[in-house]
Image (cartoon, rainbow, N blue to C red; front, side, top):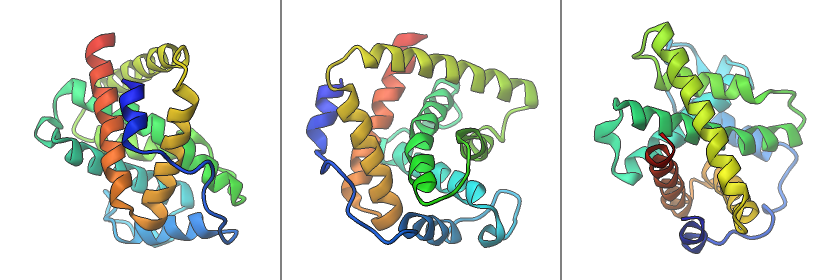
Length: 190
């Protein structure tokens, strides 16, 4: 599974050199085109909330590109989406930390997860997030055993950069493949 994903897109070893706050500015521009679930002014929101909404949109785009949008309310589909958000939050946070922001994964993940689970009551939301976290941990443990795992994570980091900074269509296609891999993992791990 990881080998097929690696063949879809081969990133350069590092992101292009950029001004000190290019990723932060790209997050703000990206977020300004989104609607806040609470109707708040996204531009005035802290960077972690903006990043969480951007991550939500990236995951939604991956879901649409994978052809799974019709199943968005299916519990296994929501689990896969949350796993995708867990995978995407790490590079997003890493890029922002590199630019001097003191933010945590939970704060970015929490915004995206809240958006995906807004249709659930508090108990169902907690159970879905807990189940997703457990399956994601097992997925990562299994994937670490594979030779290509580091390259796969590097590719994910590069794709998040590419989508936020340039909205590169190749990145959307490749992230859809990552989503499908996580959705397949849900079926295998449950």
